[in-house]
Image (cartoon, rainbow, N blue to C red; front, side, top):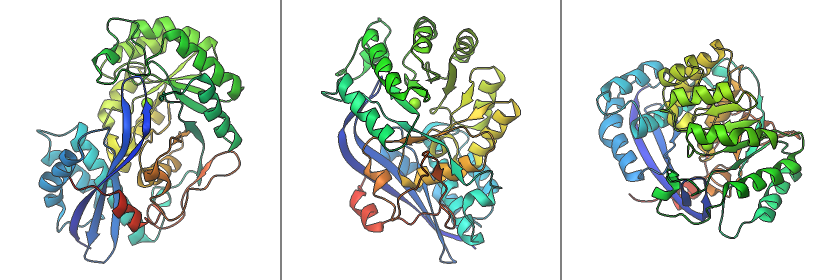
Length: 390
Ligand SMILES: [Mg+2]
């Protein structure tokens, strides 16, 4: 089997504004990558974009990565990953280039599953056929007060979720608050308002797991001064409190706030970088994004590094149905998987792109799709309707 074409498909769909500690998003986007072969089989992957220009990521694919893949055997995934990594070593290794490599890797695994007539998680040596989840939402939004946040969480509980994550940290209370650099500073709150939001959600969750995410907007001093109150309010996981570059700061937070599990970092990439953080005790739970950290192949290595150090892994996932399916297969193949993030903001790229919806049991464990490869069939009319020329 030989690769005959590699195609980037840019998707973008407007959405109602949602804000975290730093950014305000008014559209959802994804870079799908389709790899066709001379056998007639094709694979689909997704590069997560973190708001990067789709045109720039597609240019990296079209001009630098895709030409290396034409004529290659797509079943040599480990070879191809290393080939792409080394051929882009001078300008890549991280950021958009690693994001695009991630999407290619997912498409290669989809192809591998189709070629072997197996779902990916079974090819990887399955650990489970279902993955525990939590509802990820609780963003700031125009006109959304604490009652609005309560109604949102009540909706998740009514569907069977027990555990949830909300955003905190959209504050301008200190001179170094990074929100001050952002174009849109609407919806900022005070720290006290954030604590009230946390208290309201925890009242609804009861014994359920409560996660809060500052999107790296704090520093270690701020985290140490506010973390204990979060723990007192019942928060158990604190996600990416500070930027991942401050490994010493994360290690200090992990050491001095033992009542909280520090989880991260969705913006980190590559197994060597995660291993470095694990070795320095910067994280209790590792949280790579399959579409950004290096694909299925690299996420398995990150999971293995965590497992060797006695740490758990909980995959970040904030993309389309393609990335969610890839994340389910990857999570189901690792014995140290905790929960997977199930994003619940309105997102047509997740809910409308595949012909069959994702299924759960009554405890909101997601069932791993059982078809070949990723196990999902895309609605190509929807793909076309969400496509955007760049
Ligand atoms: Mg996060």
